[in-house]
Image 1: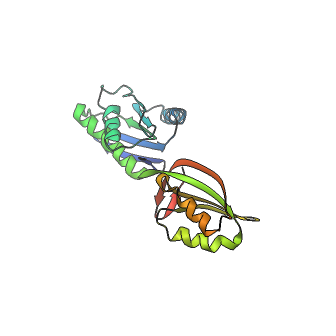
Image 2: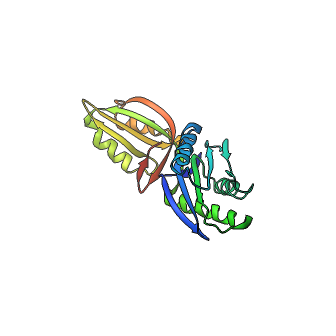
Image 3: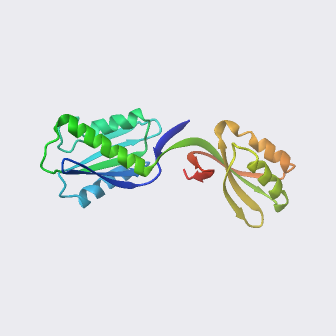
Length: 214
């Protein structure tokens, strides 16, 4: 399983016929986070003509909320929500702030302006894929560290998440859920001298060989 979301917060400006549109984008995991962000933007831009909020939450996009905030119905939030759904982007909140420039854009113009503003925000925030992986924590003697490192580095489906050196080596690795049989390989490498401390499933992104946290 996988889903798409944004990596970072962003704030981008877009000007159409003297109206200024500011897209505020943030990755979130809960409605509370989304609502707090919306209130923060509303307070910061209290004198704006409109603050249009949209958010989708859940790997299955089960939570979807939006408001045109006084713009003509269907011209602001819904086109953005529809774009997000079509592109499969979730776990984010967008607030598009508009400062009216004195020139009416019409229904089609508003739809284009809000959609383009959102696209610029998404580009700035960087849309990435998150894949469901299993995190496995293993503990072993230093004697086996070289062998385990060689095995991990030689396997494209295993990602080194974290390593701590104490009285023993404590390592967290990530791998696709259907590849959990790697434990058998590690057990064999260490002649059954490895402790399996923890297993958990979460969503992660791999960028340039590096793991972006859950």
